Amino acid sequence: MGYELRVVRESPLAFAELAKAIAPAGFELHGSDEIVAGHAGAKHTVARWQGEVVGEPGSDWQVAQLLRLSTALGARLVGEDGEIYGLRDGVIEVATGGSAVEIGTFEEIIDAGPAAWSP
Image (cartoon, rainbow, N blue to C red; front, top):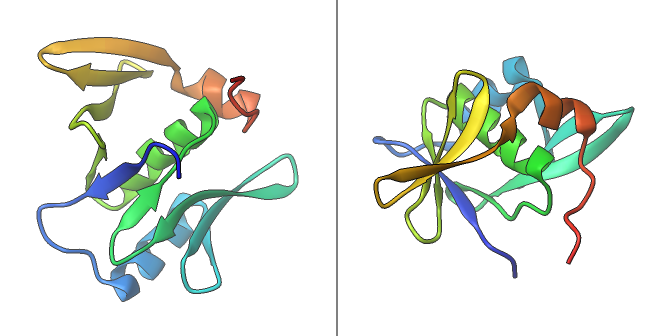
C-alpha cells in the first residue's frame, strides 16, 4: 500500500452524490469503487471509493487529478500526515506546518500525463 491522499469534506459524501458530481468534471466510475480519468485515449485510476474518496498516487498527474476531483466535490485534498494540497495561481502546492512546497504547474502536469514516479 502506498501513500494515501484523501478527499475530505465538511459533510459526509454519499455514493450517489459522488456519482453525480464526477461525470461533469470528466471522471468516470468503473465498477462500484474505481474512479478513473482519461489521458491519450486510455483510462487511468485516480482514486477509489471506500466510503470516502482515497487515492494512492504514483505520479504528479494523479495528484493533479485528485486535486481536480476534490475541487469538483467541494472538498480538500489531504495527505496521511495532514498536509493539504491546493492550487495557487495555477501551481499545485503542498502546505505543511505553515510552509508550502510547489509541485509544479497544474496544466503542464496534466498535459504530461500519468508517467509513474521513478523509485
